[in-house]
Image (cartoon, rainbow, N blue to C red):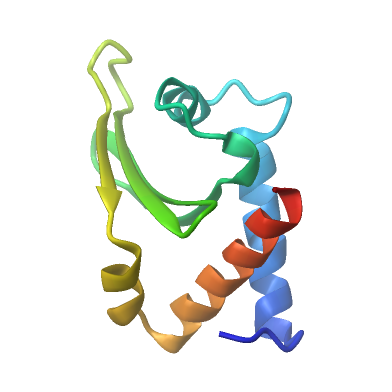
Length: 116
């Protein structure tokens, strides 16, 4: 998808940058950042596409450079419980997304490529 600098794209860009800095920035001590590091992934190029707060856990779908997606589920109450990590098929994911989510994904790709 080609980005055109629309207001929607700019809103997604601001959101993605803000959540990226909070979760994966240099000063962050986020549990999600630690999981990415343990997986050997570079959090500098990671952007959160979905954040699903559940009753006792948080689930993030994260875009990684190279058109890779990873879902990480962390228990909110017990840090000793191992995270559930699942790599997702990028092309299958994009096929099922609305136009709005495809725009968000394209912005995440652009941001990730800019820092690579």
